[in-house]
Image (cartoon, rainbow, N blue to C red):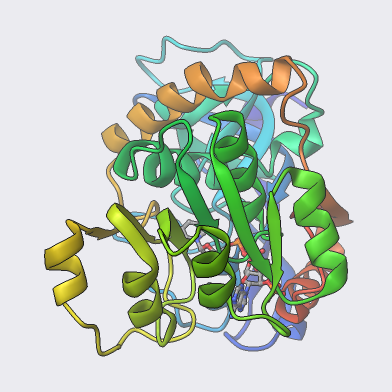
Length: 333
Ligand SMILES: NC(=O)c1ccc[n+]([C@@H]2O[C@H](COP(=O)([O-])OP(=O)(O)OC[C@H]3O[C@@H](n4cnc5c(N)ncnc54)[C@H](OP(=O)(O)O)[C@@H]3O)[C@@H](O)[C@H]2O)c1
């Protein structure tokens, strides 16, 4: 059907906000692309931790963003808004969204679209933009990862953890990574981690301290915060960088600032979603240039845990809440 004649599309929404079973298919108008935007027919939508909080009504949508969940998609461009220059209709892309991915169609600024890397299937591509853009801007840009750095990555089997382990290894770092189970530790070793720490049985601080001969680690990718923070500041080596991606374990901690002062530490954090269109486009260009060739060379192979249809979105959220997944969960319309 020509796109001009399409007026309605199916979307997944939490009605009302609440548990996974509140996720329902409903109908909405197909959005229209404005200047520098494209309309994409969705092939896959990546599931992220932020979707779960949005479903519960705990993640305020940034100004101007659609209130539908979904921060990343893959799909086919079916319509160009005015003044688009990077793509043509029919191109297959994957895109970083401001929201709106859990839908049959999504409008995206063209700067936030990237070609699907060679050797990656369109469905797997749906799980790449959010994690690789986040890891790029934190680990490589703000964290200035260098060859021979020692890096501690928490939650190594999350989408973020997978991307961070692969990129750190490919850049020549030594990687420590944490997860809750033996099975997840085996997965982190498969991704390339030099030392998988089962945090149910081992203390990450003790392991890293001992196995670096007391020197500590150069970079920590933290998604936990809370009571991890004082130990992390203590564990960092001279010139170390603490990169805070989330604070799922708590946002307050008592920290000995003398470690920051005496060891020249940098503590930084960032959130991708509220960044401007221009900032996101700039990150996408870096990811296309620096990371997409690693998929084409086979150095990174997407880690997709499960693909479920939109009608099973509740199950997708339950899997993520139970944290039984390894890698990305993808929804398909
Ligand atoms: N700042 C940003 O721009 C940005 C962007 C995207 C994502 N994020 C954040 O990055 C994190 C991962 O995102 P995702 O979408 O990939 O989610 P996800 O797959 O649900 O990952 C959550 C991870 O947290 C791990 N975890 C929970 N408690 C832990 C602990 N005490 N120590 C170590 N790991 C622990 C879980 O692993 P176990 O089962 O092994 O505990 C799981 O792998 C989320 O917190 C998300 O909010 C931030």
